[in-house]
Image (cartoon, rainbow, N blue to C red; front, side, top):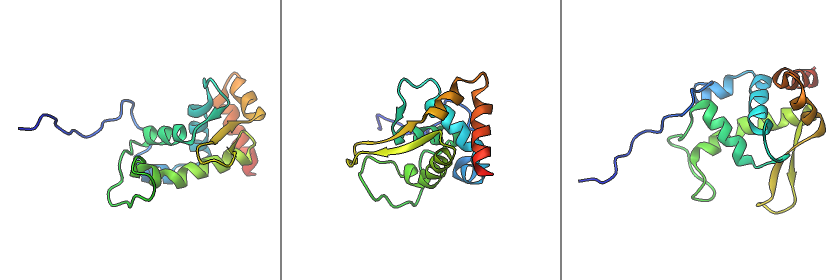
Length: 142
C-alpha cells in the first residue's frame, strides 16, 4: 500500500500560452513585456535571479516537465528549465535591446542576475506600465 499518491501538477493560475510550443510561437515583444512585468513590477530589488524569470515562463505556459530531455547540469535543475532557456534568452535579448533590463555577472556562477535599468524603472512608474514597456520594446525593434 502506497503512502503517497503522485498526481500531476496543476497550475494555480490559468496558463496564457499552451506549453512550450505556445511560448515559442508567441509574439516575442508581447511575451517579453509580460515576463518583464512579472519579474520587475513590484519587485523589492532591481536585481532578479534568472530562476525567477524561468519560473514566470513556467507559470505562463504550464510547463513543468519535458519528457525525453537529457539533463546536463546539477540534479536539482528541472528538465523543463533547459527547454525554456531559448525563450528566456529571447526575452532578455529584447529587454537589453530596449535598454530596460540587462544581464549582470560578476564572475561567479552564483552571481548571475538580471538588472532593471533606469529606462525600465521609468516605464514601470508610468500610469500604464504594460503599454510603456511594450512601446519601448516595439521602438527598439524598428
